[in-house]
Image (tube, rainbow, N blue to C red; front, side, top):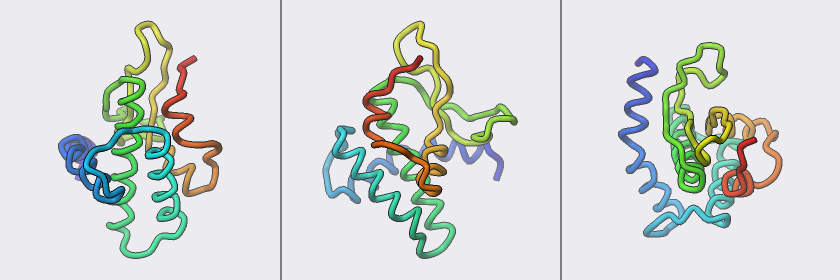
Length: 138
């Protein structure tokens, strides 16, 4: 399956993915506050660092984390999902967030897939909520 098809499936499945996160948290609605964001990080960090089961299940967990963390970022900072088309980008072929912040802000693409890599390698420093809620493009 090519990257554009995967991306379109990702975008088309955001609502279902967020509903699955509600089930994980046992809530009716997501609020994207610091407590919720950090709970999600802890939940998925444990899964990524202690994978059990099939590769397909781990891929699904990564999609859930990407959808939630990206949606939380967009909720607090604006922006939109795009497919990374720059072949030199480590996030090539995956969903990224662009056009966030206030008008005139300088921004770089944000990739929740990068956050997964950092969680898996124990290289994510600080709280995810501080990055998402306290984000300030330079």
